[in-house]
Length: 593
Image (cartoon, rainbow, N blue to C red; front, side, top):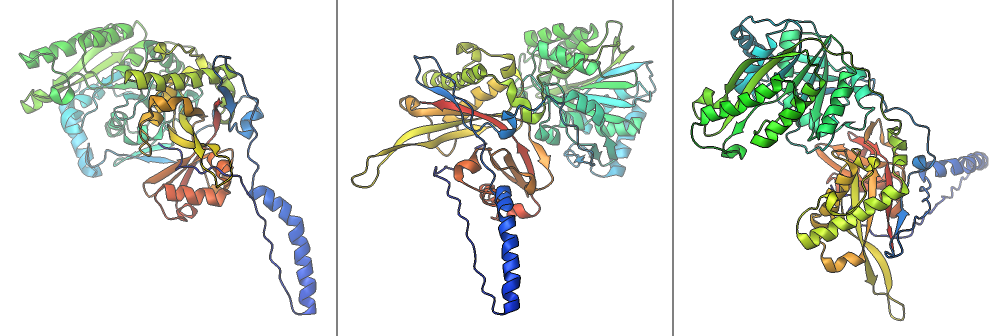
């Protein structure tokens, strides 16, 4: 996402214009005089409110003598510079916020009666097998015509009354690294009605850096949503906790399991949502071409065997060794890590789409696995003290962190110019601190020194012009990874500019904006120019400005929102009615030659 159109840098000029009113009658003169006095008294306060002072920068930090560039704070927000006392993540809003299903009419019927009839049919065919003390399940997440029956077999094993059901699914469409996402809503809705979320549980998860809120993940990801109508029809009443997992290391998996494990109780059911092997060219996985049904089953049963041992690490190693395309392997690994040794795993139902259609050219496997036993009394994990509120989170980045991040961005671009590929952080001789490993969105802005030819008899003038700017709004990966990816994007993938060349690199300066997670506001009046970045959304269109854009342009709030509407390809006054806003803050720092 680009941060602004081509920016024209200029000195801000603020003009105050007055109007003279001539009143004919004597009575009118007196009334006019009184109004004038009141206006004089109110004008200063009014001006202060409408034209907030841009935040001041912080001291420059020197870089090594061999490199003449220095780190410069460009837009450190006023709130961050005051270093407020640490406080916990703000809770989910009390007002009712409903997430409608994006699967209705596509993955299952949009008609409540038809959907209920289909699901009831699945449960009738699933038999009456019951297992005592089911505390977790692995269920498939394809369209109901493919995997609904297999999922019903798993759910039919238990008729316990759970007060909370946690569903952990993989992210298929939105890349996330070393993190999981939970929604900031109060209810999910399907054709069968609304289900309340356990917002207290979700708020506790949000106190940990690895748990973030990435709205588009929950809006479009099917792996969690697909389970809900089945749960509604079978369990009727419960509170729902939807979790979408990105790609995670074993360390992150074990930490996530410990955090979730410390919050659950005996009335909690955890579901890991996953299909098993995806075979065929459509899935880019063709490890064999003979005896396909038998070989697919062999791969799947090998995974089931490791799952039965509750071996999270062994399961990940099996997947890596065989290449088995099990899409929900991270949710499964988190579940296995959370289970106690005394828990028993049983394969309830297994099938493949190839078996259903008679065609194994492309086939996906589905399995239901039940886990029975008791949850261990895990101690509740305490959130790290440095994971502060959104607006004070910038204190996590030290001056050394900022220096390393700027080095990382520059070395990434130079490496890509020379090697024609995206580097790994380990190839760039940059120190990655714990603060840089936490999930956080970032923009990388490139500005180029150019010489402007002045009029006759005047010296040419050097100035900085925008050369590229792309970033993330919501945290999707560790901060250092966001810097690497968006340095590449700004240098080579900003459609407004040609790719950066090696010859240009010495004339380019780099600026990084490390963002807090966006949060909704009730109205545009709550936006603070110079402090808040803004996301405007209306009628499916959206646009964003970083906090520093308005002060650099000399815009007030009306001008900022007017230009933001135009950037979103909306009418100039679109922001005034029917638009929604998210705001975020940024720690902005950059090189200075």
